[in-house]
Length: 248
Length: 80
Image (cartoon, rainbow over all chains, first blue to last red; front, side, top):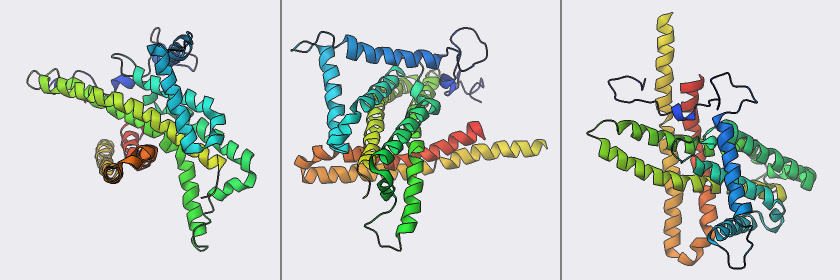
């Protein structure tokens, strides 16, 4: 619909999310290298550059790159300690990996002509499902059947408890859905909005307004990228807290 | 038969548009969280910094339901 000549839109705003094979035009199998694979690997490479190559100096007075790495480390460390408590720090490596990976996937998606891997529910869904499975298994391993106390609200009147248990159960199983779709949806929507404005830039009369709007949206998207990585991680911490200390 | 397909197509787009009304609810929710946080933070600025994590968790939960309406719109447009 957007390719109609009369509207002046020359590309569809959702075109940027199409998964394409890197080489040739063949069908996509699970082993085909696609643009998703490329940008996922680039995200890993950037994380490696910042945390392995950037901190290899191990200087007492950190360089700029090293202090960036140290600040990120410190921030996530403090977040886990505050939200999930001291016991949560055992799972710091996983949560920190999640944060860095999502942060750089989001930020790399903002490079022009790049591909936003985290805008695909297939990518964020796996991340959220791993957290969900990990936290559920952890809850049962650490607390046994006490973990089910999460659904049996002791502070509520006895008559209300079965009703609340159903609600709690539903909200528990909806967690991976909202966890993954929040990240994917925010990035998808933001990038689509930028592309919609970009399409209007082809019309001379509104071009200045639309270009200014792109600049504004771009800045907003940088903020959204960081905040969504933060939110994904902090929710992981909240779920982890439920597994470590079930019961309300 | 062609009419049925056309009406189904029409319904998809109408439904996707209607699903976006749900975003108004999420907007009110997120605004409520942020507004109340600001009101509280201005009364007691020294306690504000310790509550930013709670602020973001609250925002994330309020936002999730708006994201669901967005998901419904996407499903109608691309998957139904």
